[in-house]
Picture 1 (cartoon, rainbow, N blue to C red):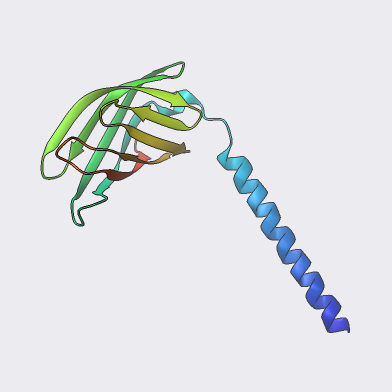
Picture 2 (spheres, one colour):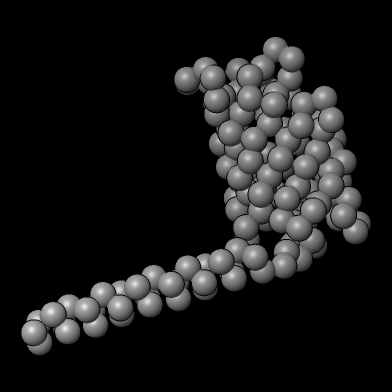
Amino acid sequence: MRAHIVGRSMLLFAVSVVALATLTFSAWSQAPLDPQSLVGEWSGPWRNKQLPGANGQYHLTIEEVKGDKVYGQVTISGRETVQFKLSGTLDGNRLTFGSANPTVFLIEGNQMKGSAQGAVRANPMDIALTKTK
């Protein structure tokens, strides 16, 4: 009988720890984003979702954030190098830019993860960036 009570107590303790960790993580991930923290250089890999082995580097420089507007430039390298200016929108922790070939990033701290539709000749990309400066 005592083993049953100890086992049940351990189970309740474990469930409590998991619930507390989940609440803490949830609160952390919903912390408001300081838009000015985005200014700087972000870099990381991209990979083509449909063509295994097609990948390269993605560099995003955010030069200015005014309200919900984000301005900067992107350099994508791989088989070819493409560079363009961006004018995007920040909604909470979501950065979007590009109308013909939309790019969407979710931001958590110094990390951005997202996807881009790519150019007409390209396929959709997965992108993971880390703030470097």
